Amino acid sequence: MAEVIEVSGVRRSYGDYEAVRGVTFSVARGELFALLGTNGAGKTSTLEVVEGLARPAAGRVRVLGRDPYTDRAAVRPRIGVMLQQGGFPADLTAAETATMWAGTLTLPRPVAEALELVDLAHRADVAVKQLSGGERRRLDLALAVLARPDVLFLDEPTTGLDPESRRNTWRLVRTLLDDGVTVLLTTHYLDEAEELADRLAIMHQGRIVRTGTVAEVVASQPATVSFALPTSVPRDQLPELPGTFAVDDGRRVELHTGTMQATLTGLLVWARDHGVELHDLSARPASLEQAFLAVASSDDVETERTEVAA
Ligand SMILES: Nc1ncnc2c1ncn2[C@@H]1O[C@H](COP(=O)(O)OP(=O)(O)OP(=O)(O)O)[C@@H](O)[C@H]1O
Image (tube, rainbow, N blue to C red; front, side, top):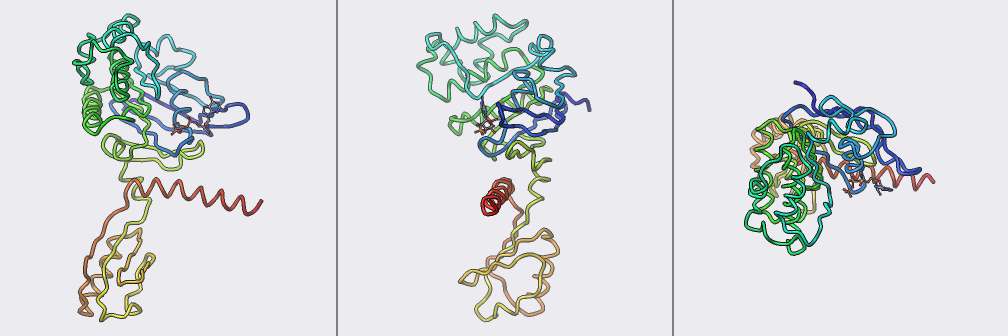
């Protein structure tokens, strides 16, 4: 499948500070790729380079086969951009804002259709300054889809939206993907990434530290098997199983394992052979949140180590 977005070894600096430190990924047509990461990880800095708003200090970017910075005139008409903070003239209405923006485009959607797509048709004649934060966000999205873009960049598109509006936005994004639009998204909402992303990357301190499908990224973390041990069974009678035992003050036992099936089999065979009934037995894979937190905390440890060494 043809790659619509290709990013290879991209670096970006602000003065002496290198915010993006060699980022590589690609996105195929009709695919949604999500960039996740801690605050300041470099998501927006990366997105701006791919959008052609900034030149990378090093590396190569292609969008629809062209350099989005040097070949901006060719790329810009085919992309839609929803920035983290869109600036609108406050006194224009939503419809006037969209009409003004449509005037800069070659073959825009009808303004009414774009507002309808983001559920703002009923607010068309309301001045931007009177729209709520979430409504402004949706107006921003309407402008991004006005040009019928082949590639859509969404920087935290649902921040500040109520749950229903978020779900409506997700529905719109899915419709666009079905139509073959390619989407690069940044978000702090892990459920949003789980809902929408075909593949994702977790960035931290300017680098991609995990990437793949949600399932692949989650599989990098241990699953949890837990149960309550009957009081009649001493803890030291538990079998030797792969994974770490974490026994709290009560009778609850937790195992963290990278081989859930083998661990469960060992546990259940032991329980059967010893006539032990395991109460509240549960086995669950890691969540995307756990994978995310592991990335964040592993670097915290590194920072702490550095501080101790210094
Ligand atoms: N214009 C700028 N001048 C100097 N430093 C900047 C500038 N823009 C961003 N940075 C720094 O670069 C780093 C990456 O910022 P960036 O906005 O790309 O992160 P992010 O992952 O999008 O963060 P967030 O989740 O908070 O939006 C941060 O340390 C930030 O302070």
